[in-house]
Length: 192
Image (tube, helix red, strand yellow):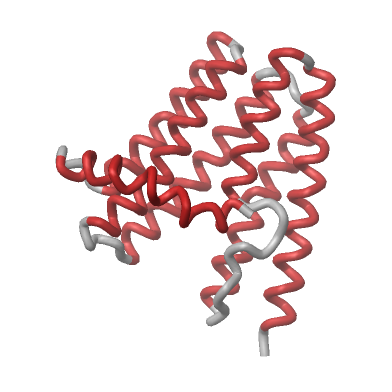
């Protein structure tokens, strides 16, 4: 779903990406900044256990992830190495974002399941693409953008009601499981 919004977001991202590029920042540097912020988020969550600070740090880290690809395109530096770095570090960030929920006291079972599902979803895409399939992005209810938004919502709501946030986390987990099934089915059906 978020994949469809990316075209409109370029209007906001391009000027910022141009400014950062003029300052000498490369796409890989911005990718690494996003990763560092995800570890800062984990540390802040561990020390202060403040979900609102978590929301802010995830939002900034995720914004770095949105910028890195745009900077690479503007600099004509988009390539397989950058793509490899970006997608690999995205997985670490995803795990960090969700580990913050365990620190706050959310169900370790649900959070562990969610971490596993969050790693399987992009794996299915990568495996399908390695087998020659295209158009896998956008298949399924929950992609990375939606997972980040759900994590932010769970954190934000937990500030007001842990019980409601736990219910949202369960829905997040269920939708992620549905996405795994959708992607698996799409890749399997598309193979010769």
